[in-house]
Amino acid sequence: MLPLTQAAPADAHRGSGELLVRIASLYAADISESGHDELYMLRSGNGLVWPSQYPGISVAQNDCIVFDSTRAACPPGSNERAAGDHNINWATLTAAPNEQLTLELQEEDLIGDDKLGSVRITAVEGRSSTVTWAKSGDFEYRFAYGVTTNPWP
Ligand SMILES: [Ca+2]
Ligand SMILES: [Ca+2]
Image (cartoon, rainbow, N blue to C red):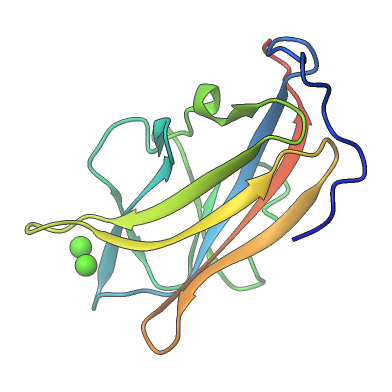
């Protein structure tokens, strides 16, 4: 974990300097099932982030779901797919400066959904990164995000 060089004031309140964690893209380097995974994303404690409604979105290997024109997680030759009307619920991705949030990738199944992984992100303005959810020999998903000031406070 990176050390925090500047802590948020204890009396900081939401609404002033609120940040938005923007998901740029999600790339399926390898999927957990044969054919397709049915994916959805949660923010722990805040519910469904993507798609806007359960159930999950059917994703094949080498698909890259694009939410943002940077396509940051999409390698050359990937099958780019626009998120379309299955867009992200940005309201669940707002955060106070330096707030930590946990994003979980889930895969829908008839008998109990599978949690593929979770990753913790610290909301630091201007930070962008690519993160991987993977289990060796099973699946590998990469997604890119950036942190900006909230344009819709
Ligand atoms: Ca499934
Ligand atoms: Ca499964």
